[in-house]
Amino acid sequence: MNDVELARHIAETAGRLLLELRASGLFEGKSLGKAGDRTANAFIMEALAVNRPDDAILSEEEKDDASRLKASRVWIVDPLDGTREYGEGRPDWAVHIALAIDGKAVTGAVAMPGANVTLCSGSCEQAPAPASKLRMLVSRTRPAAEAVAVAEALDAELVPMGSAGAKAMAVVRGDADIYLHTGGQYEWDNCAPAAVAQAAGLHVSRVDGSALVYNAENPYLPDLLICAPELAARVLDLVRKTAS
Image (cartoon, rainbow, N blue to C red; front, top):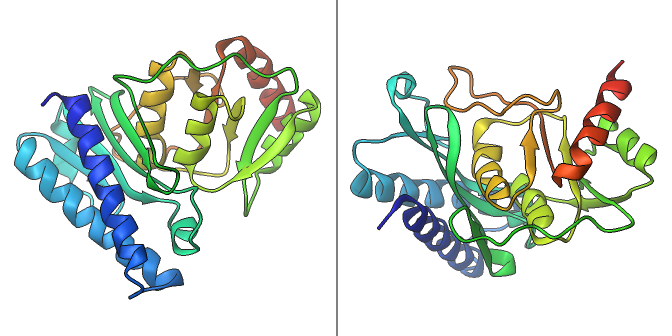
């Protein structure tokens, strides 16, 4: 199976495991989120070790291995993006499986088991055109001030949502138009979503307009913009004005 097929298969299987764990009734709240992180991570690490033994892995739930910095191919995974939402029984959480080659997100699968949806870089359709009344995604618990200010300038509707993957896929699916994040992220938060969004023809960048670069020594990758190409210049300009 090729890289895209493998990413999708692993993401969907991890998602099913997480649904079964949640349905077991053995855990709830924070303990459910903790168990979900560990269970999904153990499966993903084993699946990648067996199917791509020569590749490096960067996972949110694993101790970072600096040897990945010498690798061309690095799988960057978030076994459970939106742990809080998962623990609360909400649908807006995701499993991220991505492959970065020489620092670029080239393959990605984002499974959203709670919504019975998986999107991947090899088969997603082109994202729909923006709505006449723009919709901007923000964190449901801690919306960033910059995003709120940009939304006001665009007269955009704020759409609160949980995980980064769920927000990014909302733009890919046409349920929202702009995902602007300035509140801090790591590579595993946005590598798979970025790969899928790029495959869907969307603009994907840092908020200064520069490219997202993966497999860095420090995996902190604090900001992100995903939107239709025709909106990018306007949004980036508003971000600059908001920051000045």
